View 1 (tube, rainbow, N blue to C red):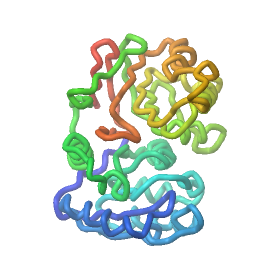
View 2 (spheres, rainbow, N blue to C red; view 1 turned 90 degrees about the vertical axis):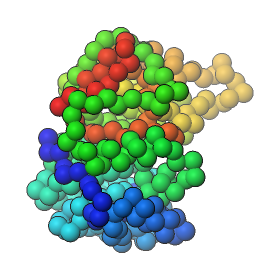
View 3 (spheres, rainbow, N blue to C red; view 1 turned 30 degrees about the vertical axis):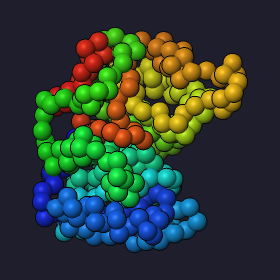
View 4 (cartoon, helix red, strand yellow; view 1 turned 120 degrees about the vertical axis):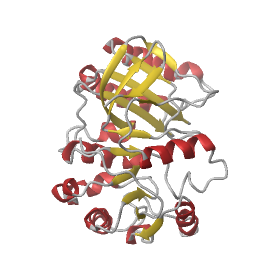
Length: 310
């Protein structure tokens, strides 16, 4: 895997919108937030355009991604937000060019589609991180989240360090054991959507990380079942579960008509007999840790430790 050069003060960041349109009032705040980190900012056309619910046409969004990787004056690329649409531009990206121009690429949620593609087709390590027009501009952005983000995108080649939750948030052991492998995955909805496409996630011998937001429990059940039936759970060496924000029952007044997420995990994931560590502080939540997708990690579900070992 190619580890991109870490960012430093004064570097130039390209902002792109691969997914949903950015609210006009959020863009100046997002630019300011990135500049406060000590970076210069180049704003892609996709951050200002709207095509219904998308940040411009598929061609425009793909062109922004390609342009930012091709431009040697751009040191890193931050996805300005998630939403929906990144999967649509996958056939339009120049993977050979991206592979030859490795640089920090950061984002999460819908951006999972790009993480999977860049990890697998470009052998490029990418970063599952909060984003400028969403988390960066929230008043509740905390020191833990900022620190995790900055360390991820600046000390990119750092090895043998731990990925730890905030001190007041304990991880939970679902299945004991140890596992080592390349870290892959992200948002469950996007991971499931990759199946049966040329960009299907490869979990063989890898550590699969999953999280999601605003999904009924039966939707989580359906997507995890899809991963199980496709062999993706059995092929993984271990599983990490992040935040499941607002993933509740469809009929909260009729709990007997639903299943708890814990029950779903126990019935679908546990039989895979893989080490599973849950309640990782990562996903659509604050505080949230940043993850180096594509790096080799080792975790011990019993001691609840996760280490980047490559």
